[in-house]
Length: 430
Picture 1 (cartoon, rainbow, N blue to C red):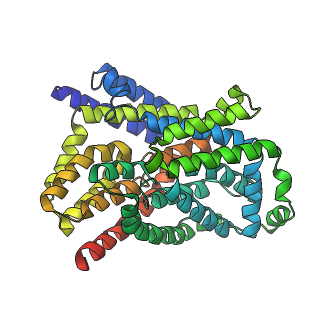
Picture 2: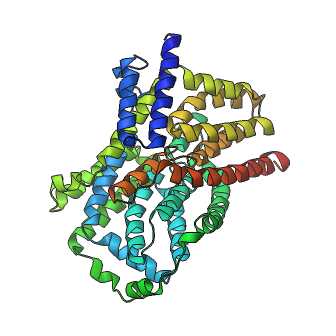
Picture 3: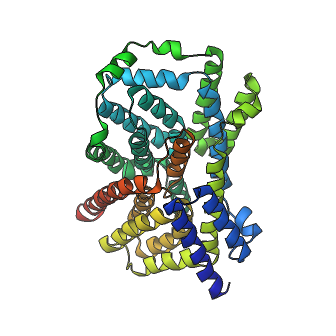
């Protein structure tokens, strides 16, 4: 591919990114427009954009979202989320900070078992209802949940899509991730709670009147359709089991989600058009456009060049190499989605690890940098994009900069602590 196409592709990506940040036009329009220009200048083509696993749309992500959005859409009709919202507020005695702590812990733990996108799809509707009941702005609570989902997802092989790529390339098991990444993930979740107490301190205003109103409610009365609720929970349990048993069943999460959605629509009385109206179609289109743009950067060699330049500064498995990989991955994952970044960086990391004979420390540095770096900006990770879409649909929009100004602080602190963890565990005492 010629040099001018690489420069043109970079210009298109930067231009689309500026439009997304400025919010002068809808972000979906910017992403799809950028994708169209990438195809127009032949920085990518239809085969690379739609069929290639490395440079095309990640259909597994798109159809996972589609299936889970459909399931959540059915569950919304049962009153389940209202029930959970009232239950959570009553347990927290209406105290906003206690509510946030509950939501952060629930999100982090769920993200370790499910993927973080599925988790935020389930938690976000509850959060919106909780905030509505207490008269609180939803944005800080949703943003905190995104951070918790990306931190919690770091802990396991299935928690964040980049971890699946790393495990496949490095030959790492589910237990390897638990042993090496669960400890730091747990510590960072506690640190996140402390950060949120400081960052969102103005939000935690206790309204005794609203709290008393919620405390007087009976959450059981929120359930509108018990039969549909039972059907939905059974299907959701089967889907979760399918996610957890992926190493045994070998069904991709997207397949499990679509099977679950199809089963739920088939056994319930809910009309298919009614379910499809609950799907966040602009969010799915945004993902498609973003994947095509990033794929074009891979096709033209831009991401490969950046990754090799990053790798070229490393000499082997020493603290310097691990730190460069950790911080470099965090920076790049905040700019491009961390899934294609890790897919590009994995073979380079494999070569470095093999030549240095390290004990997987470079892989843990890559995982921590990519997963935690996704918190830096509004488009750094899939969960971020999904939550912003949900917020916008519910008329509580979160701007790019509102998310990013908090995300940069959380990323800086968590990545910095991860650097200390890597150095202490693998070099100072390793």
